[in-house]
Image (cartoon, rainbow, N blue to C red; front, side, top):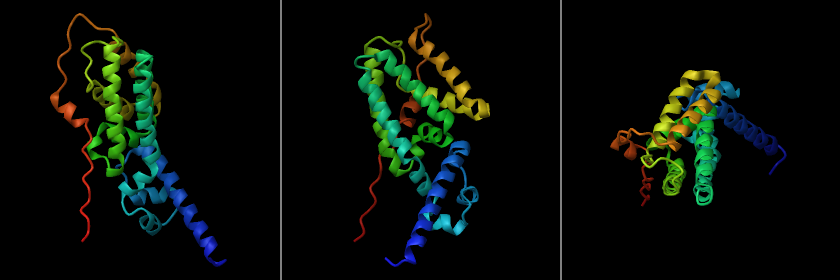
Length: 219
């Protein structure tokens, strides 16, 4: 490597980090329905620079959200394990964790509310979280820690309700989201005399991530 190449490589890495950092802020505030040009403006780099490194929004989202989606799946598996010894605490803390992550990052919220729209990279993490959440709910219900008529798809109900709250609450989203969670946790824990109507069958299908379709091999 020549002396002239080193500063160019350093500049390129700084540009990449600036793009990823700026995109993280834009995605958290505005969600994924933004353009690369918009992100480039916040990053302070030329449009050509961002397109060379991230040809699509999906490519950029993969770089920004990969760690967060992995953490989400890890946290769900931890909750499922904790439920064996502390069923209510595991369920409560997991619900509050999900709501907090939604309230502070609209891009994350969109990924978990619309898992079928997730990129191939995230489908494995969302699928891992889904399987762990099924185990979590089964364990918590078996322990009698939540009402008998709680359905796994009620987590999807919770995520959708919270998504609406945070979209309307603006800067107060974290506080509003926390209050919603506290209300619903009480409802989930204590059964009422009146039975609930059954959950929509379409929701059970909607919350399941589509399996990644392998790309055909080139001859």
